[in-house]
Length: 111
Image (cartoon, rainbow, N blue to C red; front, side, top):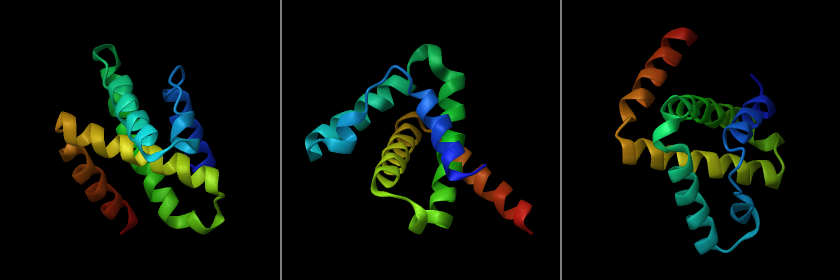
């Protein structure tokens, strides 16, 4: 998947959550947007969506490392937002083992 496709998946997962202040707001508003998004994706009725988000956000992060020079400022901010939310979700929910499994699988796939 390309960066744009991955970013679209993330955007779809946050349908109904307004994170526009992360792109245009102050540092405090950005922090509140991140915590709000973490609560949004971690809702009890969104367990499957949360796991999917963690996976897709990690793939978005990997994609960003490959093509960061090709992105505009808005795309970088959106990617930073999703990465910050993913990191917070993983730390709060203790699903960090998922990251290690994805990294190991990615390493084996590239060999």
